[in-house]
Image (tube, rainbow, N blue to C red; front, side, top):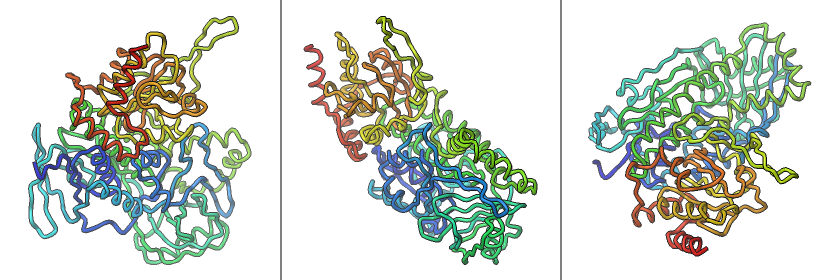
Length: 584
C-alpha cells in the first residue's frame, strides 16, 4: 500500500471533500487528489438545502456555511409585470433545526470544507490526475499523473470517484450514463439593481419564457438563470438579462457586467449502479441533471456521507463487507427519483409557451387566495427540494417499518393501542426531526458511531433493558454510542428537560431507537432486550461478532471526541452501571 493510505478520493469538489472529511473523521488515512491546478474560481451550485445543513451540522461544518451564506425562506413568482404569488417556507410537517435554504457560492462551500478537511490532516493534492486503475479482491492500484508529467502508482484498499461528469472512475468501471441531453441554459453571476426584497428566490416569466433570480449574501449580487438565452455568446448578456427581467417584473431592472457566465446544455443521466468491487462513484460521476431545483451538489454530499460511514465501518472491521452493497441499494433509487423530480422542475421553470402568461395568473390566483391549497403547494415544493422527506424505509438496514402503536390507558384501566402520531420518525426516516426538541440530540448526531437511545423509566423489575444497554455499551462501544434519555442510570445519560426529546422521538417508558451514523433510524421497539437489539444490528454485525479491543475502543472514542461529543461513554462508567443494575 502507498504510504499507509487506506482510501484514495479522486476529485476535491464538495462531494470529494465531504467523503474525505467523513472518512478521516472516522480515523481512516485518506489521500485526496484533483486534476485541476487549484480550487475552481466559479460557482455552479448556490443552494444548500435543509437536509444538507443537517448533514453539515453532523460534520461540524455548518457554522462556516451559515456565516458566509444568506437564508432563503420564500419563492416568489412574477409574470408579465405582475406578482402572482409568494410561497413562504413552511416546514411544519418536516421539523428541522434549519427551516430554510442557504444561498452560498459553491466556491465558499468548498473553502469551508477544505479548511475542515485540513484540520483533520488531509490536504488536497492539486494537479494530480487519476489516469486509470486496476483492482483485485484486496487492492486498487491507481495510476496518477502529476502536473510536471511524472507518473506514480498508488496502491490502496479503496477508491472513491468524485471526479465529475466526465469521471475517469466511471468510465474505467464501464458504467453507462443512461438518459438524454436537454435544453441549453445560461447562468450568470452579476450585480442587479431591482426593487426586490433579497429574501426570496424569484421566478420571472416574460410571456414567452422564464428566468430565475437568486440573491447572494453580497448585497446587490445575484445568480441569474436564462432558460432560453438565444445565443451562446456571453457578449451583451447583461443587456439581454435586463430587458427580459424588466419585462417580466414590470419595473426597470439594471444588470451590471457579469462576473461569470456559463452557457451549457444540461443532461438528465445516471448510472445503473454505484460501485464495483473496491471502487465507488458519487456526485456528478454518478448522475448529471438539470440545475432547476438545485439538487446536484446536495445529492452528491448526501451520497458521500452515506458511503463514508459504511466504508469506514467495514475498513475498521466493525461490519462485514456486505454493508457496502447498501450504498447502491439506497442511493440508486434516490438518483432515479431525482431525475424525475428535476425533469418536472425543469418543465415548470421553463414554461416557454405563450399560454403560460394567461393560465398562470388564474391558477396561482387560486393558490394565493385558498390558504389550505397554498400550504399544500408550499409543503409539496419544499418537501421535494429540501431533502427532508428522503427516507430509507425499504433498505435492508431498516429492520422495522412505520410508526409503532403506543398503549393508552382508558378510564376503566384497560389498555388500547393507537398508532403514533405521523410526525414521530419511523424506521428509515431521519432522526434530526426530533432535534428541534433540544440540543442534546443534535450533539449526539455529531458522533461518528451508531446511536442506541433508551427511554427513561419503565425498565421493569428484571432490569433487562438497562442491562441490555449497559452490555451493548461495553461490548460495542467502539462503534455504538449508548445513551439513556433523561436518566442518570445506565451508560451515557442524555439530558431531556421536560421530556421533550422523548415525546419527539415517540419514546414511551422503556422504549428504544437505533440511529445510523448518518442520522436515519434503523429500528425502534417498545422494550429493549438482547434479542431485539441483535435483530436490529444483524445487518451490520460481523458474522463472528467481537468485542473491540481496548485500544480500538480508545481510538474510536478519540475520533468521537473530535466530532464535538459533549458526553463520552467510558469503559469505567459502563462497567460501574452494570454492577449497580445487577445489584438490584
